[in-house]
Structures are given as C-alpha cells and as structure tokens.
Image (cartoon, rainbow, N blue to C red; front, side):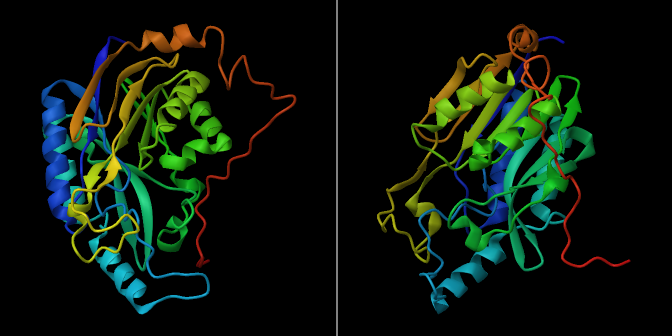
Length: 308
C-alpha cells in the first residue's frame, strides 16, 4: 500500500440543533476530503452534544423536575439512524469517497447511546459502535452498549475501528481491537486533559497502530441559557478545549495536540510503518502468551425481550 492522508476534525457541536451540526460536519468532511484525506475522524458526541457540566437534577436519591426537563430536551436533540443528519453525512461521504467516523448521540426508543458511526463512501452508513461503558454521571443519561457493536472495517488503505473516550482505558477492549487487526485506531473523545495524549501514544505503541483522536473545542455560549452547568454561565468559558492529535505506531506524534480552537489536523501515513513497528512487538501475535492469558469476547446482542 502507498502512503495516504488522514484528518481529524476538531470542531464545536450545536447541542441544541443536531441538523445544523450535521451540516457543519458534512462541510468539514468535504473540506478534509478536498485536501486528500481518505479517513476523517470527528469527536465523541458531536451530533446531539456532550452536556459537559450538567447534572440532570440528580442528587443521590433524588430526581428533580428540572432534571427530567433537561433529559427530555437532550433526548429530543439526539438523532435517529434513519434521520436527516445521517443522510447528510452519507451524502458527503458518497460525494467525496472518504471514510468517516462520527460521534453522535443515538436515540433508540427512550434510551440514548453514545455512538460512533462509520460511513464508507458510496455505501453510506456501514456500521456503528455503541460505547460499552459510559463513565461516571454519563451512566445517568446513556445506555450501555454490548459486544454486538465492536466491528472493524477493512478498506484498501487499512483496517478501521473506533473506541470511544474512556473505553480506551479498558485493556480487554483494546486487545479485541488489536486482535481484529485494526491499523487505523480511531478514538473520538471528550477528554481534553493533558494526560490524554500520553494515553494515545501508549495505545499506538501497544497496538502498533496509527491512532487518530478527535475532541471538540466548544465554549459555554454554544450550550444556550437553558443549559445548567457546574462550569458557570460566562459565554466565553471553554467547556472543551480540544487536544486532537494523530499518532504513529511507535508513539510519535504526527499532528497536534491542538488547543487553539476549531481546526482540521492532517497527517500522511505510511502503512509500512506498522510492520516495521511490529517487528519486535505484536501484542496478539508473537508477543502474546495464550498458554497463560486468554480473552473471550461475547459479540451477541443483548436484548431485554426475545421473541422465539
């Protein structure tokens, strides 16, 4: 395989208007593809929004009426997979031929999921990954994914998979991704701390894979006056400061991290770097010890009601 270009998009969502955000994301996708990017990665919860600082009125043992109202608004702002937001992104990938990974809040009945959607050129939406383990207070507003949405996608420029935010701290999940041969490890996130980049470098070296991580850059003003936040009401407050980056399979930072604002980061990747890196460390190959350690992954969907 020859070298190719990839991009990570650091942008703000409009948490109150999913279609507007989808339109902006489609425009950024077209821009990145116009610069030659074959894979374009967007942040966690970009469409539907990441409600940073909100409590949804839930002190221990209580659910306040204003929290119920906040959840109802958040549910209304989420997207259906057969909705116009997904159609807009599918149109952009069909037009450009690019592969895209996009973080959304997926609505499935009354339950919301933090989901990464996969779009593949003329094939449109080809798959999804629902976050397995929402972190801390996220568990109040998001459902839990299961093993049925842990796919990877083989393309002519590499094998693409996505692991969302703090799922990246789950060793078993990472091991499953490496076992599936992921060479373009996508990490949509809402973690903008200084410790995030070292995590991405570790994963790149552990999996001997390219890592593309995208985070939003968003200020308090984007949330609107109805958004209750522990971070205050100053419209200029930065709610999420970015830090998007691209890392090579030996941990070298190829682009980013960027904390300056909305930006598209690019890197040209040489697929041969992966095999050069795996020469001395193949975590599910010659460096594995299946005689000592084994991992079982249940990829069956877990439904509350089964009709037989």
